[in-house]
Image 1: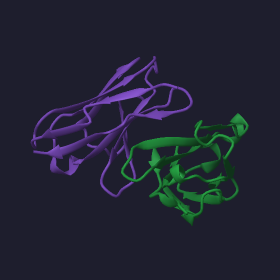
Image 2: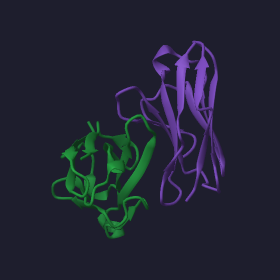
Image 3: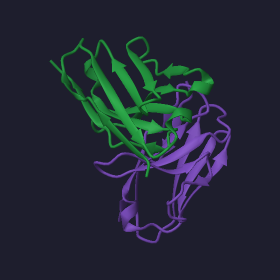
Length: 115
Length: 107
């Protein structure tokens, strides 16, 4: 069974950092492209970042709204993908989902940025 | 960036009705379009990938069509459990972009 479990969310102050983790199982992680997608409360979905597999040299792509502040990474030995979020803003408040190839999704983790 | 215009924003229909939801891309995205269903308080679930391929385990009353810039999600016979918000996503080019969603309710 495919599973994706996000952790690391919480309440933080504007300007601070947070690192999300997504633990996966049930599929061959090492050759899977992984994404982070977020959803602000009561709003629609926003794609955040993608990391390709080793065969594509772990190339990463980002939404303009997070470029330079967020970094996606992966550890194939642990079947985990991460999202390092720096210089957080109020508008980064959202539920963050990791997704496998934009097909299987985790249950999401809430990040609240507020003073 | 590619803009995805989804319509309608809200839809009310009766059980057994045929329902269609549309997404229009601001430029050609070939068939790189997915449809998702999101029920209240849950994560999105993939229904259709690459415009017309039914995801494993999804009922056959769901279908997708289209290519280029115009796409449609069809529910052939609406069921009570289909109450949800539906989103399209283009994954032809970065940044990937979602439609704004269609909230579907039962009349």
